[in-house]
Length: 461
Ligand code: ARG
Image 1 (cartoon, rainbow, N blue to C red):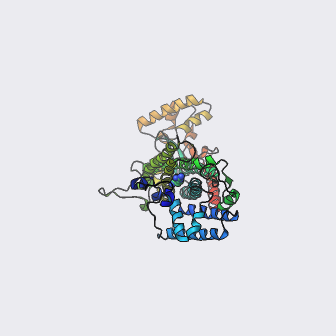
Image 2 (cartoon, rainbow, N blue to C red):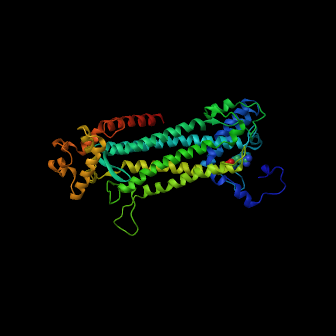
Image 3 (tube, protein in one colour):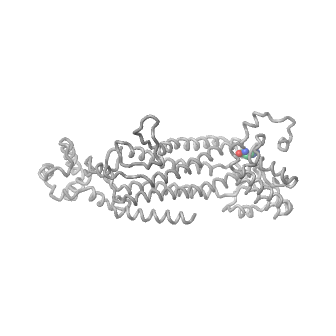
């Protein structure tokens, strides 16, 4: 690595080189790096800063390096600091002198900023596709179980009956917000930093607009110091990923609960369940558990980068190299979680006999009885008290509401009539007919709009 030892007489300490090298992980930026370098070489030639022939030689050399890497033939030399140096050094071996002209009007500081932006931009696109596919799985499970009612919970205590589809579409909404967050962050990621040089800009007559056009960027960075110092876009991806994994983790928790013997609302497809090494009867929801577990690591990566960045003086500091492993790990974790969840959710079997039993247990219609009294003229607070007494009466006798006689009802309020028996799980659900409510008509509407969103988005990609 004599060519970057520059002013130094001494060779670098081997351990220090190894310690500071990012090559073991940033090799993953090779595609972005080569793409950026090809655009840069073309721009230099167009501006007459290097010769057209030199640009062609450089471009061809870079293309064959990409092939070498993809065919596993590229030699990653541990003494080279990072993927940028590794590619440039190899280019020198392949094309000789012309290689030395590629780094004209560029610094590794704006180069790495560019590569990271290209990488995150692609990661956002992949993430959006995976989110849509996962939302699609939620829709298909909802549609396959359209009429299934389940107890909803607050404080993990049975609360009111809802349609299972309504519950699942709650996750659709969460993932919809996640998709919006990723899309929105793209605006700030889609900014072209080349031309910032080391930090102050470059002295050559470059064409930044041309570079942006070649690389498909919407905007140019407007301050060279900021452009080489900024990793907000990485933080934003990791923050959006943290929220998204939080949502997936909550679903994971429900899948784990629901597949427990105590709930037994669902049965996971065997392809997504694991046995125990000692207890033959077990069918464990390991995929959901691992996803719940990985959430901690995604949050950790976000926290790590925020802390890494928090006290860095402008502009580039080598600390920033720490952005990479966290980002790569977050992208890998999120994409694989979304993908495996789509498969798992799509194949969940709902145990309708159990959901049916559960929804008819536990006096879930208590609120409906109070609403009934209100409609007959009672104030809500006193209606609440009457039904509360009715609940403890029924609990003591081990009876459900439907098992109480008309005279038992009347003992609590003269407003109770025969039509009290018209209050059922189905009527309870149907009566919550407000926008965003669980009534079949509303859920049907929500499903239709969900399908439209996902259909359109998947077609776009
Ligand atoms: N490996 C470095 C990183 O990942 C690339 C930029 C290096 N720039 C420098 N001046 N050493 O951040």
